[in-house]
Length: 139
Image 1 (cartoon, rainbow, N blue to C red):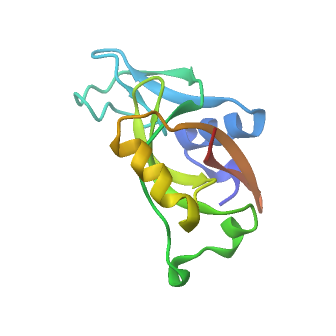
Image 2: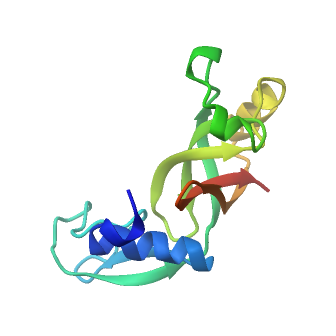
């Protein structure tokens, strides 16, 4: 889908990625931050949200490494990756592609998470045809 054809909330998010800015929506009722952004709050259901920038920094809460049958060639071009639940410094959580994970590193990373250590991540974008894709990478 072309950027010009996207819904306004999706369009602003992807325009931000083009500019290196990470946009979220903050609930005007409870203060929860939605990232990626949603029109309404998923925490309390309130309809009033406003645009805010988020840091793009956070921690990895859990992850999985894809098997060969689920490997995505366009992702593999950028390095070893897995799918992980990321919690941003602003408190919101979502599952993203996380680079720097591999079968060799999985046991060590999982042990750190289970021991309560912070496994830091930061946002980055990768180029796709006609748009940028948001992913994360281990610090």
